[in-house]
Length: 203
Ligand SMILES: [Zn+2]
Image (tube, rainbow, N blue to C red; front, side, top):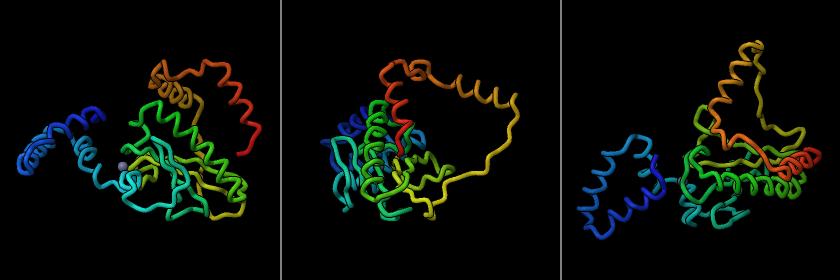
């Protein structure tokens, strides 16, 4: 995984070189990377969401700030289906810096309320697909905000599996052991208070 600093460094290394030297240097750098990093570097130019963020592909914009952009999905699940994404390229949520993740979900929550009101919806889904197995089709991380109606045709669901208690215990332990300690706890009373208050509100 390349850091943003490393990507900037690479850009600087290429600056001031002739096109031939640039090409040669770029190939050298590419050879030294693992496949994921390579895709990160070469995919960056092609990513439609990066181009949208730069204003190079027209969009129906509903939200923009320094780091995020919110647009209408051109193939919506329902009218008002909105996509929120970071302007910097990230393939999945796991590589987005924590501060930006927090900002993304704060904004997604506001957009969800706005979409709910504007579309006179009866509910909303806020969804992230991480990886093709989860239904991710875009090369750039997105939060889907989908207005929902009791009789709409959107299908988000699964058949519940039956898992015995011992295995459940094991799974819970295994997940717990993978959570970095400092990120696992919500300590601030204020945060818990607002979490409780929000339960009474839909969406
Ligand atoms: Zn991108």
